[in-house]
Image: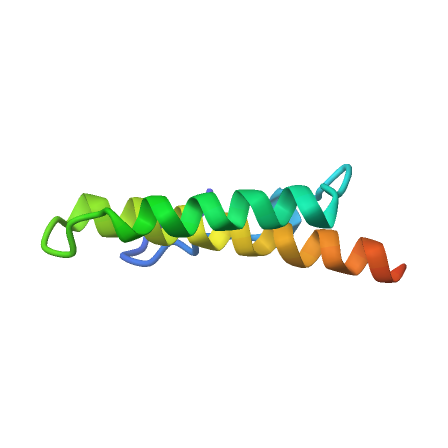
Length: 75
């Protein structure tokens, strides 16, 4: 069992291997939607900023996966 720490990474690649990649067009649509939604969050509300950061991180990760797949790179 690991010791709890004050820091928990947002993403651990070993815990989430993608099984398939979205298309680039779909990933771009989702990224645009995430940007629009994050822009509406209140910067003074901690939970809004955590939600926005998480959403943007996951969305960016999916976009990179889609681009790598389109280029034929298996990362």
